[in-house]
Image 1: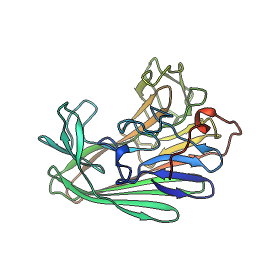
Image 2 (image 1 turned 90 degrees about the vertical axis):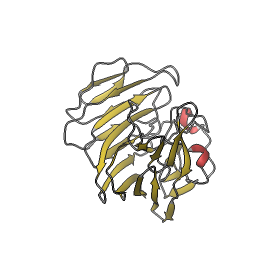
Image 3 (image 1 turned 30 degrees about the vertical axis):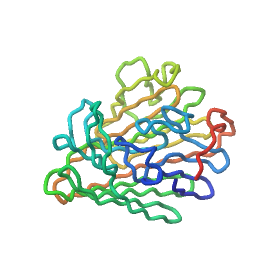
Length: 297
């Protein structure tokens, strides 16, 4: 793993080559933040299989981001026949079971600096070509994840990007403050009242959970403040208005997933960023997190 650290936080970031066993076609390989550690309190993030030390690549943990090669309904985006490309991962082919698998990973150049890691790839596969830069910056108790995508092919590049951060639960529950004017359809998993997003019940196990769609005020970036078992809070924000926002949780984690529709003409570049703020210690210990042994760095 790669490490980015200061006096407050230490980030475990996956190495696209050395940590390939943790990676698959779902999440971008460059700039994948696997864990954030408070230097005193320990790990701060979870995942769908937490505290399993080796979760499946599809689930992962931490703060992954994804360039969708198919829509959730299964419509192909970056496919040409039986070959496809997962941007930031590599060339795709279908397995005997019809699942996508990375057959030829893209190559990353990595720049390591005192306050940031920079991942860059220039990749062509399945009739598409692109340049992608992922930059992870650490300042005090704040993380900024920046992405810049350029379409270098002679055809349009149309796909979806989304962030899938995995936040820790407090006593098995999440409480979040969402933007004013946000709404949520009636559902059995989550409730929204006066900007307060809460769970209707504790989910019993990893396969028990709920997914829904948080309707955000149009034209506004996403800004969320979440509770945390060890910290006063975690803040999460985009610098763009999401096209849609999925919320999802199970017994181990909760996620707010802003989506961005990308439709780049040949030669066009699109840039965007995410910001995470990690509050101070709440003074309350949580065995669910602090007992988990951090991965070797």
